[in-house]
Image (cartoon, rainbow, N blue to C red; front, top):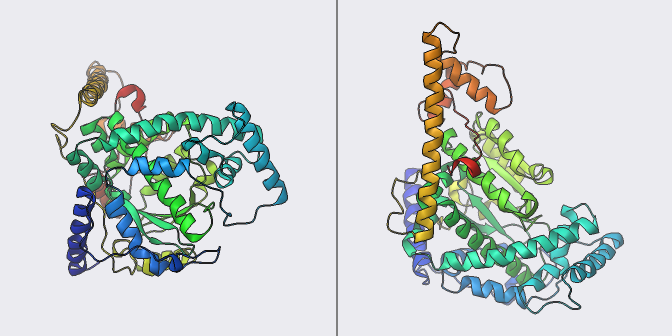
Length: 460
């Protein structure tokens, strides 16, 4: 993207970000979708008519006071909608059996009048049934566990809404993601500047517990958007969302900090899987450098196999970008995609740009519980560093006593290889790839893939 386009995008982004932060309408002209443009059947809707609504939703409603209460109220008042796909007779009968089984497990005779009602809609039940490969018994246990989990999630989402605006702004700027444009069905496309996201830095500055509040808030508000868009289209979306991950600017140390947080987050979910399954239709990963393949090998371990199979990878450069546009066109008109992601949308990127989170960025913004959690995590990290330093010192003492000890370079390679479960030393990179690795790791030619369990050793 040219420098001129970048400046234009940043200018538009700042205006929309300001609207999000204050909960006011942006001065950029945006209008809600007329009912006739939203469509009333399962036909493909006019996504161009809806595009500006997407920006309005995220720039306004996302941060407007009461977003969580509105989402919860819509869950309680939801109604059955036609599905966007036809189910087989066998699958349809299993949905009826699943609903009866869940009601029995909850000791209910009818649909509950609160937010739990949304879990018993056919369009919601089908996602749990598919996640458990049609096993009604397993799906019942999953639904009940997820309902219990989501009771706590709503509490956390309300708690995030009460956090200081400056803390919310910090997360908005550094998470660098949001809905931009619509796919060919009329469902929002979610774009992530994943290479620039510093999740570990946010957790370091604000605590893992604060991050859980943010995650809960995003989960309930984005799901509310997903279901609301289906209602406007006249049917329920059941095939999931199209997502685009841009790995431009990725650095291995920063990515590894993010993996630790993601691993810890996954452990909080029922059965170590997100409580809203089957929400991803397909994910396109663009600008993927060669070293990111190793990162992907680690990331796959955090995903269900069925979700990992939905990722499509594309490198950087004109040829790779051309292949990406050809592939994504099956699902999304490239004109709907933001220019930052190689699309042709004239709408500005309404979200943050990411980057490393500065030290003490959340100073004075945390409540007492979050400050205690942050101090505990810092002490745990210092303990890990002390153990690592002691082990390194012990190796040098052993070497000075005439025992065999690995060289500093060999030790680095052994730790890197061990992270992948191999005892073989790492391959020495050719000069061209070594230079790329150095840029991704901040100058260290040997990426240090420390996979310590953050639940035991503190946050990133």
